Length: 112
Image (cartoon, one colour):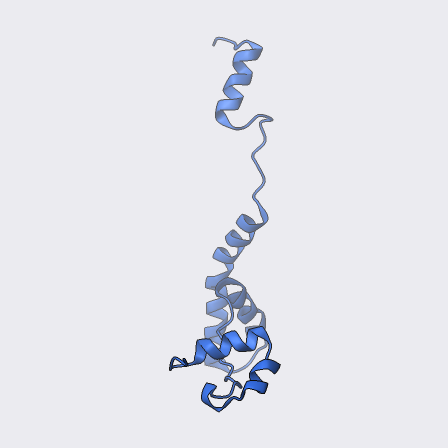
């Protein structure tokens, strides 16, 4: 078997992407994704068993795992903003910019 010269060996390492010979470590996002992919099926089984039996506290960490994987369900917050036709000029001046934007976005009719 032919031996490579040092510069040929370095060129081969550069092409392969493994300059030091060690495999690269996964990033935090890659490691998290891999762990969730491995653990979500187990969490679903635990939740099914907890629903069937009605006992045990293993459902809490399983639920947290699913929340990390898929996110929490959206919460519906009812709007506390008044109808745009019921607001006077002084009330509009007292509102914050965020309230004004939300009021205009929630309005069904266009006010001239």
